[in-house]
Length: 188
Image (cartoon, rainbow, N blue to C red; front, top):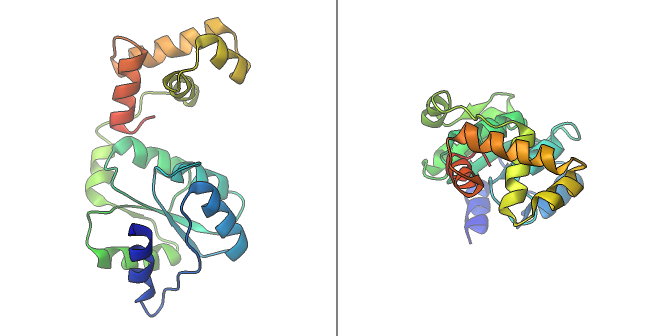
């Protein structure tokens, strides 16, 4: 329902045409490849492939610019989105007219970031490395240290070290608390 409403809202604009809609990240990638839109509007969390993963995959493959439109007002997500190459990061709570304006600005090559969230992102930097984040994420999926080691071609000791570092950097007492903190702040 939200997807349809968003498409209908943008279709009301004379200079914006919605060429496709997708219910998950895999469909979004396929739609971009099929239609080559100027701009993709995505969310952070989607089934099958996150919006941040979609943005990262598109970054070097196509000329499509990416706007993240989400409810997640977390500085960690904003930082990860920028690292993935997004051109805009807006919160769904903003007035609808701002989305159409953001589409136009991103189309002109500008970057559009929610101003309040941009200011907050400097106050709460992500302390995790990509590898620490990956190991912590896999541990939250129920994988054992040995399973994580096998998947990432690491030794079990190295995986334990990454988990220990992630726990220390988040100020947590254990990996479960570290994952909870990292998810809350948008680092995971």
